[in-house]
Amino acid sequence: MTLPRHQDPIVAIATAPGRGAVGIVRVSGCALQDLMHALCGKALQPREATYTGFLDGQGVAIDHGLALYFPAPHSFTGEDVLELQAHGGPVVLQLLLARCLEAAAQLMANGQPTLAHLRLALPGEFSERAFLNDKIDLAQAEAIADLIDASTEAAARSASRSLSGAFSHEIHQLRDALIHLRMLVEATLDFPEEEIDFLRKADAQGQLSKLQQSVSLVLSKARQGALLREGIKVVIAGQPNAGKSSLLNALAGAELAIVTAVPGTTRDKVQQTIQIEGVPLHVIDTAGLRDSDDEVEKIGIERAWHAIGEADAVLFLHDLTRLNAPEYVASDADIAKAMTQKLPQQVTVLDVWNKADATSAEAPAQGVVLSAKNGTGLETLRHRLLMLAGWQPGAEGIFTARSRHIQALRQAQGHLEMSAQHLALQAQALDLLAEELRLAQNAMSEITGEFTSDDLLGVIFSSFCIGK
Image 1 (tube, rainbow, N blue to C red):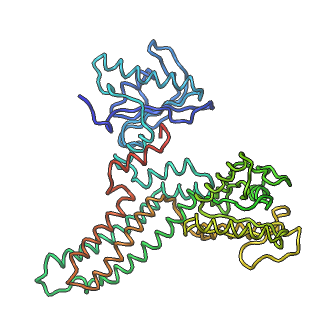
Image 2: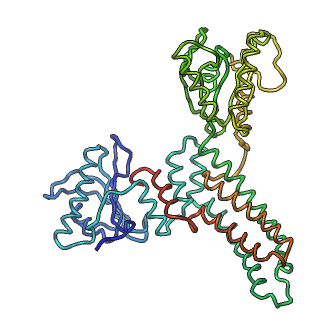
């Protein structure tokens, strides 16, 4: 009998590739007792670490380590789970992995078919099992990957909040309020002959208004969480020798890019991720923008424009010492015009006036004046970068979020706005009101996976690492 894919027993190395002190092989499925005996030579007490040998097909120990058995449903996946914690050498772990598959095949040959379909786990399949078996919801499952991938302490803490259910709790509260409002509307539709005005007496208008405010608040938190997870891409652009590489080095606090007085030193993109108040900023230094006959430099300039086109924000760096040079000013104007034509409207261009330490010239009122050489004005620039990113300092209770979460909340917000318009028309538009409320509920249910598609699950879990 062929089991559905989600019911196959699965096995994988759960630790990262490479050498380490400890490596883990994880198995999940139903009735793992036979496999446990084949690998450890004895039964294991549930949820107790047991030091034992891990045996090959001839009963010889491959390695010695800790074995843990978590019987269903009290395990991460909701199925029986067996974890073998061995020494973290790649050869040892591959031997244990192969032994698990071999033992399953031997059990099948001996008439014990419980593990006949044991196979290697797909990326994220253990977490997917946990979701399918109602151990976690979809937002919590995504938080696992976000916690692993977190690049800053703030991102890790927000992912941990989501994993503990903080985000899901907010969504469930919104969903429950929506269900209650839908119940009132449906009651009015089902009993039109009644004189009782369910919606007016229950203050449906007030409930809807409060619900809209709550969705806006959760959306604001989700935006902050998405920012902590993904950060923004900031490109430093400008003419040669404006100090772009020096600014990157100053922001990063390290000599990442070569700095010389020779124009055109930077020929390719140099990228570094920095963090400001826990927000990751992916800062990219680019080749100086000018007309050039040098083939290598021309390629670098093309790549610079490509990076500018993909940026979330652009720092247009100007050289204050050349502020009164007509040719330089004209070139800056040409670059600004090209940026206006090539960049989407939502991409912000921030003028930054560098080399304040080398001149007394006054910069235009707009933008930031600084010296990449001595650090003057860097704090102001960092603050402006946070503003460009949309960060709100001191925000409490932020949870990690993804672009699909924000999109779903915006959809729900739009449906609630339409609901308010239909509610104002009362009896003439109750059917439309009920439909908009239903669509709003579906949009929010997509976040936790209560209303979702298999295609979406495939996209989400395929981005996880193997063994998680």
